[in-house]
Length: 280
Image (cartoon, rainbow, N blue to C red; front, side, top):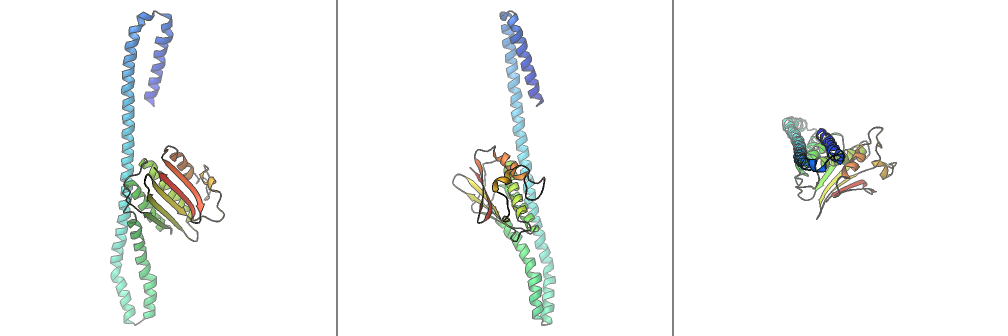
């Protein structure tokens, strides 16, 4: 910004001295000097612009690498949490067997059934759910996006939301800036999770589909019967969850305007509120 201001001021000064003032002086006297000054000016300007462009590109790469590292750390964190659950389950395994043995010793089959259904099955089920959710991401090889999904899936599970993700084919590249991509997907996931919390069926469904010339991410979640029209969701400041919480979709809309190869289709179907993010 400072460089641009300096260049602008310098250009105006040169214009005034050699163009405006030059009209009142001998053009032949200043002709050679003008050419030399403008040649030097052009070289300096070219070098300055080159430095600015290289700095901007370098900063963008650093930011993208930082995002990739952050999402990778979150994915590793999700795996570590899952590993911790497995260790806890193994630790409790002896205690579980001891409890079962007590019921068998007392020949209390009714008590054993209750113990098994209320204690053993839920513990095993919760761990299997987290394992299966992370396993669905094995086809997604875009590290930043994989880390984001892993974190959101575990978070949804903690909030009592059943988040289902399907990646049908291997996806290793998406034609969109990784920062904007994660921002867009994060907004869509957060809104879907928030929309179903407290409903009778807190379930969201996400599918990542590889087409011939594009990748489509489909987000579906239930909507209450009294939901407003679809177009209102994109109004800045609008939210069904209260004031000052409705900037997500309007921000998403502004972000996607930068990409002519990206489109977002929003509709209400029998599956509920469906948003399809297509990236060509």
